Amino acid sequence: MLNVTVWNENRHEQKNPKVREVYPEGIHGAIASFLKEEAFQVKTATLDEHEHGLSDEVLNGTDVLIWWGHMAHEDVRDEIVEKVKQRVLDGMGLIVLHSGHFSKIFKTLMGTSCDLKWREADEKERIWIVDPSHPIVEGLGEYIELEKEEMYGEHFDIPAPDQLVTVSWFEGGEVFRSGCTYTRGHGKIFYFRPGHETYPTYFHKDVQRIIMNAVKWAKPAERKKMVYGNALALEEIKGSH
Image 1 (cartoon, rainbow, N blue to C red):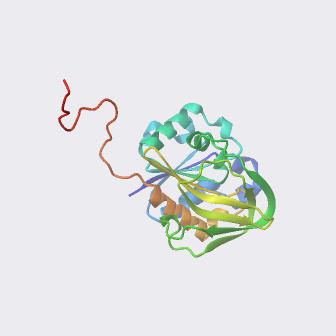
Image 2 (cartoon, rainbow, N blue to C red; image 1 turned 135 degrees about the vertical axis):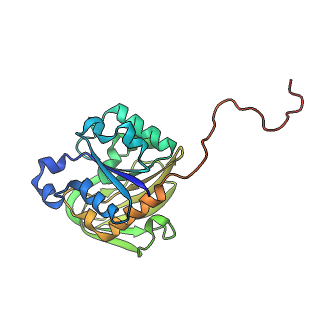
Image 3 (tube, helix red, strand yellow; image 1 turned 180 degrees about the horizontal axis):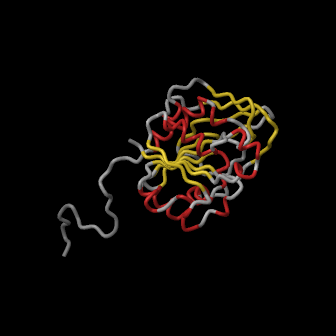
């Protein structure tokens, strides 16, 4: 069984009644709820918990970490970010959602500003599936349509994705690389754009399906421990002394 930890800064829910109305159990609670239906072992963690809810015990027991943050990126302690980064490099999967593009962990792993254009105008988002063979979009049609979402637009300052899975179009005219995969070290990373806190995006069945598929895709590969550093020759080297 896959062990999934859903991390959410959980600040909007405390400060904004509109967000509490949409997500009474918090964004992390909504995501954890549908993941449990898929028989994953799910924990949640939030910013204001001790060690942001990401102790060594929690991280070492996590196969895939889901990250949602927005208004409090700078409140995440650097030493926790470093621990998460090392777990990704060691093989833990990481799924970064919506405004997590500006999180310390995503920017650290990407090595770029991860900046973009944005607009809140209650506009339609059509998420086109541009790699229909990818397991993250298994079971879906040509596109997902969200009646209202926040716009993110290009240029999105990220490294070229290993695989571009979805591209979004917005009613105002912009497009955006909205579903991107990466590998860093032994870990798999998926960035997925939709999920503004004032819209019920995480209750949309197709959005849920992509996140559930992404968890399965990002799970750590079973492998023997890799060996680094100075290595003895496997074969006799002629002429060596």
